[in-house]
Length: 117
Image 1: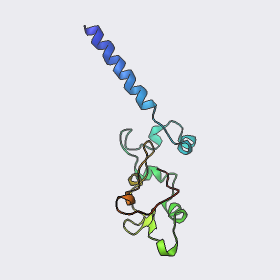
Image 2: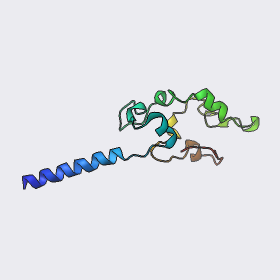
Image 3: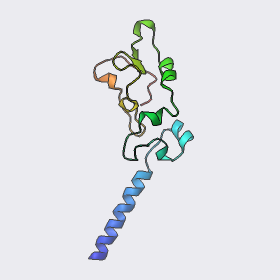
Image 4: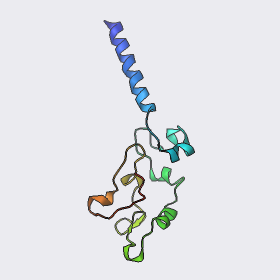
């Protein structure tokens, strides 16, 4: 009986470690970081990456410039907006392993056609 329990425990352990390894990474991040999860997960594998981890490669000022809207809609810029300026945490809108709706969608109906969830 002990042997059966031990085999079952080892089997579950193997399955759980295989699941961790099977996480999808977006192609544009795969090319840069490969399979080094700690390159982004600076707070630990089970935690969201910090904004500092994102900003090692992504510059918030460049992002704000790239996503700027017309003067009339200037505060609809997701990277420099009326509510948060440039201080909105990256994870509020972006998810690497699961698609996310931007936090703006909770109240607003405008769209960001180029949003990479």
